[in-house]
Amino acid sequence: MCGIFGYVGSRPDAGGLVIEGLKNLEYRGYDSWGVAWKEGSAMEVRKDTGKISHLNPEDFGGDTSHIAIAHTRWATHGGVTKVNAHPHLSCDGTIAVIHNGIVENFDELKKELTKKGHTFLSETDTEVVAHLVEEEMKKTNDFGAAFRQACIRCKGRNAFLALHTQSQTLVAARTGSPLIVGVGSDGYYIASDTPAFLKHTRTVQYIDDGEMVVTDGKHILFYDIATGEERMKREIAITWNPEQAEKGDYAHYMLKEIMDQKESVARAVNQDEKDIETVAKAINEAKGTFLVGCGTAGKACMAAEYFFSVVAEKHVNFAPASEFKLYHHFLKPESLLIVVSQSGETADVLEAMRVAKSKGSKVLAIVNVQGSTIAREADYTVQINAGPERAVASTKALTGQLAVLLLIAYALTGKLKEGKKLLLETSSMINDMLNPRYVERLRQLSELIKRKEDLYIIGKSWNYPMALESAIKIQEVSYIHAEGFAGGELKHGPIALIEQGTPCIALMGKDEVTTDMISNATQLKSRGGFVIGVSPQKYDAFNEWIKVPDAGNAQAIVNIIPIQVLAYFLAVQRGKDPDMPRNLAKSVTVK
Ligand code: F6R
Image (cartoon, rainbow, N blue to C red; front, side, top):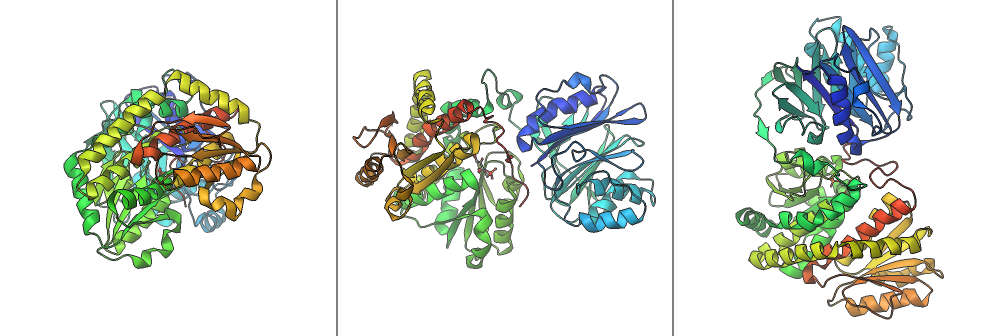
């Protein structure tokens, strides 16, 4: 949450460069934006509320500056106003700070600094950092040293980036929220995620928790914040390319990423077989395996409970990462925690993982973002290789997660090749499904239901978590009230909500629960529900039928595809921006 990007180096267009890169971080927050650059000896600042896509990089200093920072905000402290937008400045205007996280003790620091004569302009927690560094600068003339002292005083999980005009230096510190250095031939880039600078460099250095960096554009030094000792860092090459992070001819990233699934599921499946077997061995040897994730990734974990049961006769427990606190009492050194996360930075997931590690348990991470904190801290990591996912609503990451989890379920019983074959067939089914006629059919269906305010989705077995996921997808982009239920639970309460014409979606496969699901769909229809069946076969219970291929144990993967497309069109038809839903941000790094 909140996007941070800064540059210092030989390029003279630093202001425009950071604004351009910031557009690739807008998925992290889009309440307001701000930029600061050094022009001559002065600090130039622009900020405003709203989105940044319309901004012209040329309007931010032209060829006058070699150092700049920029920020896109997801508000925590202080309303969404121009004054509260970052950067925030010291009283003398020589220090500008941008921030992701929450300075938990900001109130106390603000009172202390106010007593010392500092004037605050905003309601944010971030502003205290600029003044705190200014105060520390009275004791030392070294910006890096002053910044380190300020960081030591700030509580919470944070990432800070600061620009000092006098020393022409950028300083960044990480105490819980992600920050990555891009090493360019023309200077250093510092961002909360790599898409900000992929166009300029694919060589990175990761700032770990408790570390800070100081750079003047020619050199960069890493330090331990607590001790001040210098740290050595490796340079790492990342494989994502800038084109993968662009939306090309698509109107929205969400649609582009739905379409990417023609190939991304196959990429998730094409794993090194030895790695998957190693992971399967760890699960087989563990005494107690837990799966945790949040939101959509959590629904992939829940589906995996069914995969592991049906394919491998293996019992695993799922808990939403935010609920894991009361489960960790079970953890032992022989336990295994499987964490699933697209971003690899979600605060609740990281916390669950760290608790597990503190109990001596091993952690397997299934992630998308290369080099993310979760990927680096886990004992075993499997990448889903979906490529950059920019839309806030997760689509291709989900199907990649499902594919990897199902593959592991097959590997648990020594049937990895069988699983791979099924999943590669599933991938080509998805390729066939996402043709223009199919997409148009779903657009027309969205026309039929776009004015409804309530929508219910039912499913059984692995289609139950997919019903919950369908609800998330529809809610977050179209703002229709959507809810998912287990088909059999309907008659225990939710069926009271069904009225004449209420849209209901039934997610089905050809399996041992099909007969029960037909009966559940019929119960909905006979109460006046307008039943949309997503199923390989047509039944009388359906008012509308969306055909999906019969994918056997991979049915969850194909069934969610038409729902993603439907959710996308519902958002567009209702005039909403599917890429930037209100109140949300991708990569939830606060708790
Ligand atoms: C919904 C969505 C979220 C994420 C959740 C976890 O479309 O994207 O529910 O799935 O915030 O994020 P990651 O997977 O990055 O841990």
